[in-house]
Image (cartoon, rainbow, N blue to C red):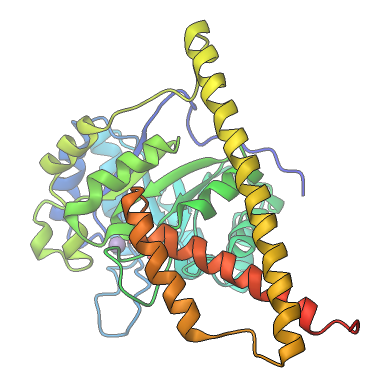
Length: 359
Ligand code: PEP
Ligand code: MN
């Protein structure tokens, strides 16, 4: 599908800043946060009114009443406001109260029925829509949501990368898997991309480094949860920060440009990139030779009726390589992924040899 997006704000405004509490709790809390953030010239004020909670019994949002607080934010601070919508009714209510931008949460993007319901509700309207990634790392599902909203006639679309559910040990609440967002950007280069560092991190101490990483990957902006008294927040307390901490976070961000036309820079970077290309060529050739040896091993095992996998040998490789990788300054996570991919490819080559009809 050939889509042409309009940014929800001029592209030159970088970073585009969305901030505000996870949830609107009371009128006082909403107004206090908005006033503090208006002084910081943020671009869009966020607050959840309807909260999709993983388990019932948690605070599920103040509902419609909160929309009049957001309306007051607009009137008294001049800030534009955004809230999450998950059903057609939410859309109608939000529009009635003059909400400027709608966003789809991760638990909505995951469900094509819900996305379509919202697409039908915004059809023909002139309202920007931000689409969070689905909770699972499924790029076509994310793209599908973008397509549904686009087909409803909305061209002012942005995406919010908020990380993905993950079972296992990780320092993040939702692992970023940056490559997935980068892949989305490769497909839709003019799509505005925002990093929701709050839901990626789930904790305050990582917010700055994740926001900086997003800037270094050329994201257009950030969405961060800000609360006047974070520890007392009714939802997502561990990841919210005060307006003052948020000011420090934003001012610490180093913004680098995507490119330069400086002749010396261009010549030098070309030189370095050529070296990278040559090394990549060498790596590919080496991997090809490694697979040829694997095939020989496959033939040999076949003749001797030996299975492909010997766990002890695989453990030995892992141990040996980890020590060497460490000495080369390579991270354990990377080497693990890389080695496992090579191992799988090697198994596939051996499988092919073992199960071919030839002698
Ligand atoms: C939120 O932004 O508060 C929220 C519920 O986020 P997500 O949809 O990313 O879980
Ligand atoms: Mn939240």
